[in-house]
Length: 132
Figure 1 (cartoon, rainbow, N blue to C red):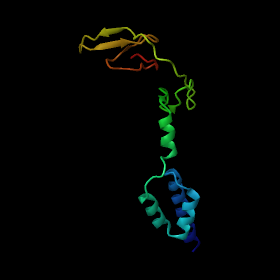
Figure 2: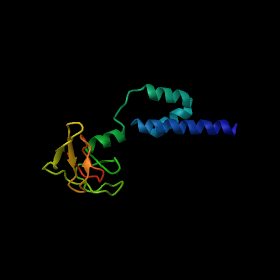
Figure 3: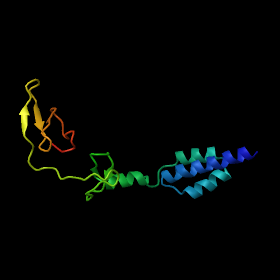
Figure 4: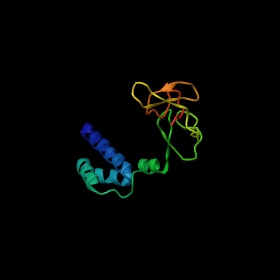
């Protein structure tokens, strides 16, 4: 009997967590899941339309810069990534030197920072520098 009650409360907690992720009140859905079956509450919750965008999606839309080191989204005015502490650099205004690749007829680019000749179409060098 104790195990059934424990499963019931854990199930209601899962319903509350899903409700919070979907922009609804977790506490209210926890109480609903306890009053009804947590399985029915979960079905009702998933059928209802979203009231507001999930917080993670809204936060990601407000950011428009991606860290090249770790891939985390960052605010437009950030200078240092809060995840990996990498520094955001401004993109150079002048393109780096380019050569015509002999084997494919496409342009290969030299990295101005490390001197590496990058494959045609490469935008970011292995050292992390933007090369266009």
